[in-house]
Image (cartoon, rainbow, N blue to C red; front, side, top):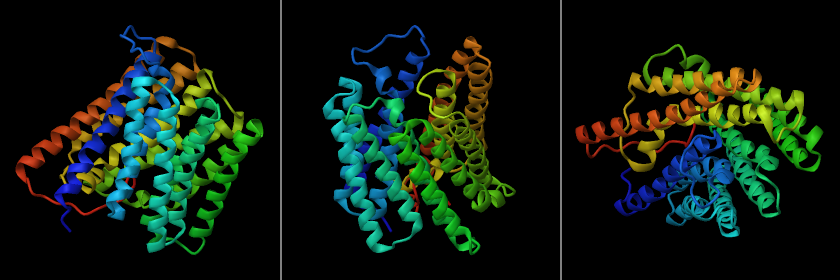
Length: 375
């Protein structure tokens, strides 16, 4: 099916706002490393997390879901999160920026409601939970909570969304107990993230247990275990998925074993295990699926895509083990810079690959596919 040109004209600017959120979020990350860089007038460091998770990842997810629904009004969801990212950068965490992020979450929930009417199921329920977690995070932010206090909700947004997509892919090969186990893991995740707000101490530990239950399901039932033995794009995707699951398991262990952390090395390790090691890895390996699905522009797989993926995981390992656990600050700073460079290197690979493919096949059209999950 060929996308209407008018719709494509709207998708590109919306995707560009997500890219802007990513780049400014990365700059904020460098500022948080105390590098001697010019600081903008707005407190960019204060919005680093929301920019990366809701401004960038949220816009990607909402845009792909809008494309899957096929209704023009659905593009309002990623448009709101993209404009919210611009507002966060220009004005900081103002009321207008937070309200726009909340509105984006509400619109995403409406998109899932329409998709549910088409084909209900546990996979879509998990993705809906992810959208609700986004909404809950913005409500807590509006109520005066700090970003570290609602990090479990941000983590639930990405984890539930990706888990739902992976269930959607694996359902044909699932054993009889696969879906009930998934439901139990999703219930544990929901109970844990709710408890993390009501009773932060024990709630954070319950949330960690929910994460571990979800990771256990993903590792056992995800098709990545089989496709890791293949070649080309399927193997690249599988390697990134399994590495991401390892980081998510580490975050689950840190939450379950030690409870909440809002500052310090353990907070840094937990935060980046989820949002760099897990989430960014998902984005890296599924860019060859996301870009053609959203913009109808091919992005062929090439082995050079392993380079930024390897740099991401190697630098994150140095950051967590040497920088956070052993307290070697120079290594922590260098590893943080390499984290940023890995994302920029990945963007360069995407732009080069898409540009060369576009010149070779300017009218190529790819089928739609799930955001962050791939095939």
